[in-house]
Length: 129
Image (cartoon, rainbow, N blue to C red; front, side):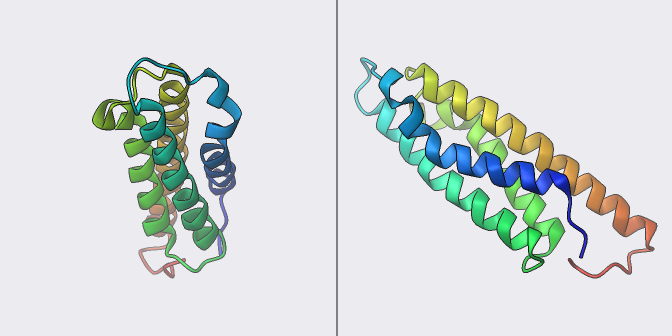
């Protein structure tokens, strides 16, 4: 079973995403009703999803390609979610989402590309790990 360092970065990013609303909540006061709540709920859902997916991928319980692809999608969602669900008025949550989403997207994409290259180098006979 091949493990990539990118998975560990995504795991710790997932922990940060989940815990970050508690760390930055003092700066979340905004005039827009409910914006902070939408942002926090988004982070509280995406964070554990990233943690579970990377844990399953690291332990070989989820095919690496699918795990990386799922985290890639979650990273893209996190990057775009401030505008989609409307919490741009809460700047600390918005920037936290954008930066963490971009990092998840980059590292999951990197792991995805490495896995695809590994599979092509082995002639497509690599086990779905």
